Amino acid sequence: MLHITTEELKKALLSSGFIDEKQFDLAREEAEKTDRDITNVLVEHGDVSEEYLAEILADYFGIQFVSLKKLQLKEEDIKLIPEGIAKSKKVIAFAREKDPQGGPDKLKLAMEDPGDLAAIDFAEKQTGLKIAPFIATSSEIREALGLYKKSIAQDFTKIIEENVARSKAVGADIIQMAKDLPVINILDTMMEYAIAQRASDIHMERLPKEFIVRFRIDGILRDIISLPTAIHPALVARVKILSDLKIDEHRIPQDGRFRYETEHHSTAIRVSIIPAFYGEKVVMRLLEESERFLTLEELGLGPRDLKLIQDAIQRPHGMILSTGPTGSGKTTTLYTILHLLNRPEVNISTVEDPIEYDLKRVNQIQVNPKIGLTFADGLRSLLRQDPDILMVGEIRDKETAEMAVHSALTGHLLLSTLHTNDAAGAIPRLLDIGVEPFLLASTLNLVIAQRLVRKICSNCVVSVKMTQDDLEKLKNQITGLNMESRQTDKSVKGKLVLNNIKLPSQFYKGKGCQQCGGSGFRGRVGIFEIFNMSAEIQNLTIARSSAEKIKAQAIKENMTTMLEDGFRKVEAGLTTLDEVLRVTRE
Image 1 (cartoon, rainbow, N blue to C red):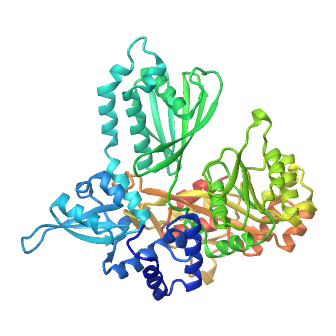
Image 2 (cartoon, helix red, strand yellow):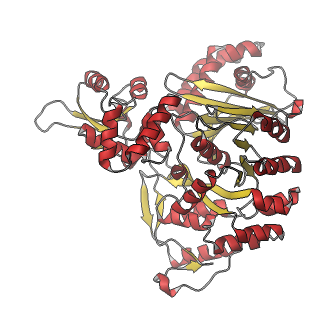
Image 3 (spheres, rainbow, N blue to C red):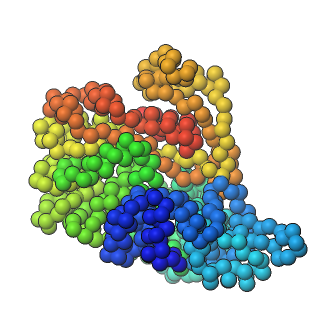
């Protein structure tokens, strides 16, 4: 909570001109009802961006704003403040300067709340330096706090050297081993490092002569460490204990979940264990529970696509579908939309497999095929609960599809996901499942297709020049995506145009630095294509037209394709050309 009264915050924001009094009062009312920080509500509503909010508060407190992502942070500076204090007070020491007059050195301290005088006083006493407070966004401070864990590979080695010998004693009871401190420390260290590295998944795999741990970071799997095979059973058992799974069951797959909590952080962990050839494989999906949801803009939506979604979610009934392969961010997009719709006056219910995020005031059902609770059965039951808004985790079969269409027809707004390669493919897919064309045409409001691309690390981004050879290679790659190349449009100042899509005139990459672990990438952003159900597309649906014809009509109606949206993000310096081509290649 900021050390600023609500009225003072209101005055600062209204004077900035970013929001009006009505927007502020609505946000304050929601914050009070949901017991949340009003600044998070304002950012989630899109009333003001996190960065602009920080700059406004910087003016209010009379200090400077600093963008940590643009700095080369040094570990020796950061660790001047103990990790526990930095996390609890949400501060980062980012630079140290000598006093030209020979006095105490000055330590620049980035703070989420520069009004926290106790934190400043502690930092001065802890370091013996003069503190110069700056304000930074909470998301940048949260990312920078991960630098405290950069040396965790050494911690792994130390823990293994000191404790593994005792953990693998011959004849030791596996359950007891799983409860022993060494195994607990190894798993906790693994979890802390994964969270610090922003990993989405942890893979624990038993091979013939080793036991490896891999993290999926920014969508790419990376080897992290190789552990002795002797501790594999104990670590798997430890995960089973935490997930409330059967420890003595090794023949069938098991799914579970648990929550990993530290003093300053909470992460929901979804667990899948399968009986592989050399021993059970564990995959843990990490779902960070942050103080606020990402906004649609932060997901990567452009102005046109953003307006299409905002208009669609204001309609009282109909279907909104999110499409794409596994791991493309579909569910995250739908959760963000649900969060925007989550108001006290509406009843929202979901049926999911699995439940990924805990949404307050939302009734969430977990699918359980073992007892006959399918998507269709769950949806059928929810319709008796007087819902306003429904979400189905995935439309997989005819029964679920028919129930979804029935729900949208009877006055409900329904959200769901579908596995198709592009937005236009959603309509033929539902028709193939068995939905009647005239029903689909009258109930489908909006289709969102998306992929996730890695973002260039903002700390080490540099511009690069494309040679003629590079452009020819690019032309061939795009032609390989079933796109016809065209002559350069003379009205576009000689810029190469393929299939009416302008290629970027600027290209960027990440050199690699400490903050991105040398990869040149840090974080991910979505690329999208979205169309709404116009009268022309309704007619094509009723006529059972192909996905190609539907896509051509959507493009005629100014739909931005994923490739085009990706090129725009390349030109803006958010990602690389190779990344866009990698995720759009079918």
